[in-house]
Amino acid sequence: MKRSIALGSSALLAVSALTAPGVTAQAASSSGRPVVTAVQSDYGATVGYTLVVVRGSGFTGTPRVTFGSTVATNVRVVSSHLMAVYAPGHRHGAVHVKVRTNAGTSRSTEANLYTYIHQGAAGSWQAQTAPVPSGEPADDYVGVATSCPSTRACYSVGDYGPPPENATTSGPLITTRIDGRFTTQPAPVPSGVKRSGASLERISCPAVGSCAAAGTYDNGHHGLLLVLANGTWTVTKARLTTDTGRAQIKALSCGAPGACTVLSSDPVLYRLHDGTWTRSTIVPPGVRPGQHVRIGLEGLDCASAAYCLAAGEYGHYSAPFVDQLVNGKQTVRRMPNSPQDGPPTSTDAVQCPAVDRCTVLTLFANADSSGGKDASAFVTVQNGRSFAFRSITLPAVADPLSLFAYGDGTSSMSCPEVSVCFAASAYEVKRGYYLYAVARLDHAKVHVYNLPRPRSRQQVLARDIDCASSTACTAVGEVDLAGRADPYEGKGAYFTFAHGVWTTKVAAPVSGQHTEPTSTSYDAVDCPAPGACTADGDYEWDPEPFKDDGNVYYAYTKESGLVSVETPN
Image (cartoon, rainbow, N blue to C red):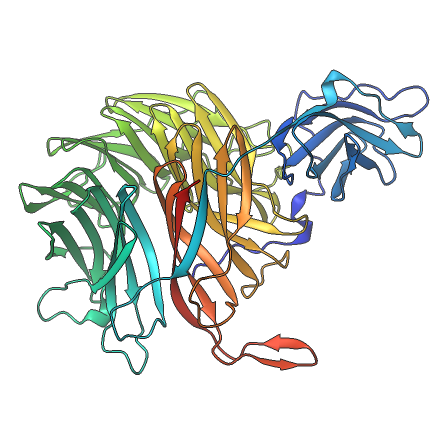
């Protein structure tokens, strides 16, 4: 199971000065009464727990913050001009955010209005232990990727192993859900290949009954390419060549049935066309074939059978590039410098909602993430040669000393429309501590939403995101219930965007589980329609927990696959 970065209850704010450049508070009243000049964000869900930055003056002592008549219980004061608070729950409508100190209470003005928005649930979630082959125990199975070509059909891949002593099947598995019925089968591997050394990492299904999956075998020394057609999975070996002898499957995308492209870390593209896989090497601009240059590949997406775009970086100074694939022909171009932030240093995700119209999530490693300088950007790529940068300005609570923000190698992005994208990742608020957020690109505008926490001291982690439309998105991950990086306290979570706000919901207990899970987490989600998502992950459990002095202890844990299905309300 993947683990989150260490978090703590002190993660809300950096201790250093965080006031954004160019923002000044009005002077406090002559009596010393506090003044609120701005609240950001100025809206959120009625369930509360939206991070709100309050600006003004006179924030001395231990301020009491109210939203309407409701008192906020989690207030962090950065300075007499800046503090942050998680909004409490409140009924639908607009309220004033007021600050009270020993010197008095701030006045109600238009500048301190905050609007609560009611978000009805688009669907209901039901979690269960992921199915395994008949007669096999559910131990040590982990689902890693899922693809849903319609609301009635989903396909998932995962790994089964190391196998329990009484298991006869190990290695990669494929799970199919058609009209609510699950079936699971061992994935085919080439003749003579040990299943225990094989794994599947990616899957893409452009239509019901048509999929491609990719992974490795021989512990990453060779590639594994699978195709589902006419009800049967077939497997093909892929030759991988790297300095270390091991490779990763970085991305897989199918623009149409029977037309798929796989991106590996070699760097190599494998293209499926007319039932045959072909192999081609990516050569960045200015690099001679065979020249030893470090190349990192990060993302790939195909908008049609004939059009794909891949992105990565190369060289000692990590120069990003894009590789446009049109009818099998590659055109590689280096990404230009951003007018605002200078040279980009890496890419992290690629989405192409239409032919010749793609978006790349890009990082600027030397950028200052304090809010006055941008750490990353959405880059809209048109025709593989026109680049438009839309900078992501981090919230004021970001640490000026952060080493990185978005684009740290773990980001996930979904673009339901051209120039409309949602990217989930993290930024530092104090060295070693992070907040998880979603940045939204809406054509020329970018807005950053901090993911709400279900309770004041809990922390959240989003691992994957998918958007069925520009107004309906779902991210999945986990919530740290203890408010610290305790691997035995995490619970799976769903983060839903609707009516312009994000809400967080902790996953209900797993149906058919062996015992109370010690932790649960979701790693992948796919949403073919609003309120109709499928999430894959895993949970850990101890078959024989014991109690001592009222405390529960776990001697050892086992791991089981987890699948959760959302049905529209």
